[in-house]
Structures are given as structure tokens and as C-alpha cells.
Image 1 (cartoon, rainbow, N blue to C red):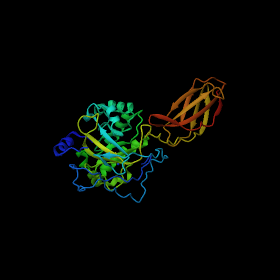
Image 2: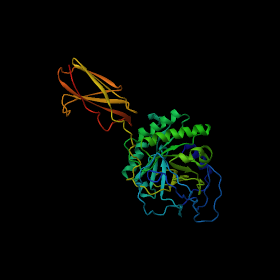
Image 3: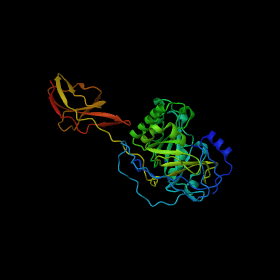
Image 4: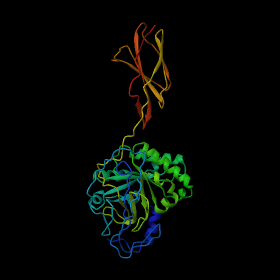
Length: 396
């Protein structure tokens, strides 16, 4: 990501400015471009050898085994599209399908109209950093989202993580969910893991933090992945590689160097893009082409509680007590009673228990009772598909 400290280091090192990482709803195996040629590029993060005088270089071989996830099983929705040639510094980037940027408030006020008119195809926008508090929302978040939507630039989201515990990772996931509510994103939600405070944690702890964040985001129906530099992927995050849905690998220069499966490569933090003053992070996408019509959200499947079984209904003078069996995963029950068999008019009551006392009923009158169980998911109630058997009882 475009970090202030890293930018300062990078600017000091740059001798000459460059002139001139689950497919749709599921992880796919990609053959990512390793190199594009170019002169006078300074390498940052990792030492590497440059090709001497090549215009293009070969991409790494595709891996022999399929990489899938159990969490995302929906059918492919991205249509295969005949893609344009993606270039960088006048050279074709092998196998790249889209060219993008990632931005935050560090990039200032972006002219998204000019960005849309350039060769940039998509953007990954920072929503904030750290735990779920408004003071840690990105200051340019709303402006950047509005710009992308106005000019139909497909976009995704990232959050910079400071989490050192599962509780903090959970709060960071809630931070993202609060920020993206109601948005139609075309690229995944990324968890940016690179801070020094996390580097000191054990690899087991890092894995637990990543799994917590990704699990929550996935359960809410969104595509998600992890951003990290090459060193982190090969040193700190090796234990979670096969569990990560979308990988975004950062390595500056002409070669990504990551040997596993990835969908996006961040190749530079010193690129220039029309509409943005100063330097900009540059990325290449290796999966199928996405437009602003693509939506990464898929409503999560919810297993509803089973049909409720009423045990008994006892009645007295102007009252009735209804008792039923508990349904697995249910957190509450909705009871309705009516003087009409067809429930043309009825009273609804809620309870967390498995019985309910009802008073104020009319004597010597027949009443009808029925119940549904429910659970909560994303703030919504999901009820049993059917009502219980309707029970008819006469009040004394």
C-alpha cells in the first residue's frame, strides 16, 4: 500500500522514474506474468535479478493441482471476455487482464474523470485502518467511492491491519462491513497485513488473525483475500497460503517472484497516473476481466430452524399456556394466536423461551395457536419455512 514512510524510502532510492494476485465467486488457478522489461527500475523490498535486454519474459508455469475453497461454491458469473493487451512502460505485461491502482487519503483529492479516461481499469480503495472506530475511517473514502461509481470504475476495498489478537481482527472485519454496507463492489475485500507490530507475532497467531477476518467477511457473503509483500507470503503467511481466497502480492520491480497462485500483483509505488498528483501504487490483475456490473456480494446461505412442534396447550379462565420443543440453532420464537382459523386477525408475540403464558382471552371462545422459530443473521430474522401445526383450544 502507499504508506508514507515507505514512500519516503522509495523516493530516496529511485534513480530514474519509470518512463514511459477464487475466479468469479471462486478461486481460480492463474498463470501470472513474472516480468515486463524496462530500464532504470529500482527494486524495493526484495533483491532480485533483472533481465538484461528482453522485451517480455515468460510467466511461471501453472500449478498442477486445483485450488478451491469450500466456503464459496456459487457458479461462475464472470463472462470470459476477449481482453486487450495490458502494458507498462510500453511493454506488454504477460497474462495480465486489467491494470489498476490502490489509493487512500495519502493520494489527496483524485480527479476520477481523468483516471477513467486513462489506461487504468480498476481501483482498490482503502476504507480505513485498525479497529472499528470512525476516527480510523479513511478521510477520502466517500469521495473515492463516489468518483469510481460516477465514472463506472470497478473497485474493491482494503483495510490496513494493526491486529495483534483475534478480538482486534474481528473488530477490523466489523470496521470493513460498516464501511461497505450497501455498496456494489466488483473486486474483493483485502486484508492488508504488513505492519511491524504484526511481524513480531508468531506465525500461528498471524494465521489465527487472518482466518478470523476472512471468516467473518466470507460469512457475510463477500469475496475476500490478503495483501502482503513477497517476504511476508513466503516467511510469515506460508501456513495460510492454501486457505486464502484471493492473494495480492507486493513486490516492486519487473518480477513478482511469488511461486504460488495469485490474482493481483502490486509492482510499483512510484507510478504516475493522470488525475492523481504525486506517486501512485500500480497493480495488475490476472483473473478474468470485471466491469462495474460485477458484484462480489452473494447473499449467504442460511440454514433455517426446523418446523416447531407444539407439545401442549393448557387453558384456564381467560388464559392459555402454550409449550413447544426447542429447535436447534433457534434464538427465539414467534407465536401468533387468533379467534379465526384462517388468522384473518391475530396477535403476535415473541419469546426466547419454549413456552408462553397468554392472558386476557375471551371465555368460552375457541382460539388458534401457531409458532415459528427464528435465528439472526446479519441483523435479520430468518424464520422456519413452515408454521407449526395449528392447535385449536377453547378458553374456560
